[in-house]
Image 1: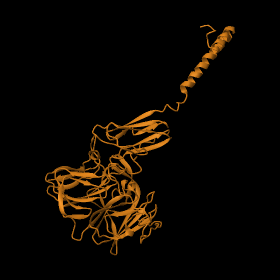
Image 2: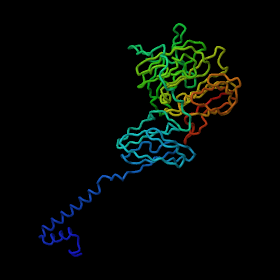
Image 3: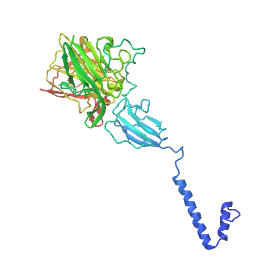
Image 4: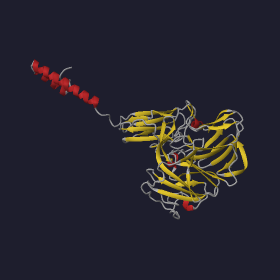
Length: 458
């Protein structure tokens, strides 16, 4: 190529090289080569342009997010893809909100800013994950779970709290415990009921049965190796069962050792409005470090429960327990009595605070009459409970004995509902009692979640 046709900068360079002496020409060539290497290196290592964001994929399969911990750069996109093959629908909640995702569906988000983003499946809340944008990933922890309980769109949620100004003030006002007088230092628990629940201990002060409940955060093992940061009454999930007789005078001293305010509602009980346990409506909040005293007469017989009234998040983490009032005419006649509290919050799918295989088997013998109290503690879902081997009879609902009991093999238990069922096993063996929504009780490796065993001996 002649100088007349070469670009001006290159023509000038060639003339300079021609006019230079050999030593100078060599130095000039070395300089040109070095300059070209610098320019190429700068282009190679230059930061990515703003439009060069990376797309990452999280597979949803076998009831897990893969990977469940993902590190991205701010501005990257993440696509969730439901790869289930059994028809299971998932939905993302937490720091992201997706529509329902049937198999094959996908959901894409752009992670705009640096930070850690937590998410979970609203239908299967034990499925959790974290996306770290521009931050180092945290150490894996078995206790990672959503900070609030799921709100599944395909299940009815609790009714909204009534609005308006608070009603009459309770007759007993909150008090701050004096040093050394906290009611829940080493709380005493009553007898093990053989189903994963414990009775609440009480003191008799005159004619009043005085119970003490302490709310605190506890690392709670839901199933082997799976630990959740639960909220507990007296250190256990569910809280201890308060069992009294019809007509008893009841006093419950509640201490709040949680990092947030709360209150306790006595679900299904007829009592003075000031003792109903609804913050800002019938009482002030029980603030952290404070105690509050409730007092009422046990008028509502049968199977009931108590729970936090500060949103489903606290209930989903474990703030609930059974409340049983034995009628003057006697309890439901049976050889065995058990209670099953059905949970689906941030602790996962649990029966009496545990997920299978950690649930406690129920013991019975052939032809024994077995009475089971089913309590839907939620906080979000309806669970069709099914017993293998024999149908059962529904004899009471929400504490009220039925004039006409009926026989079924599957019973829908909604949030806040209680049912009393009885059955008589006819054959020995290990018979399942479980939720019949498959994803609540079965996984790729067998039974999980809302499953327990009725162990029937000859």
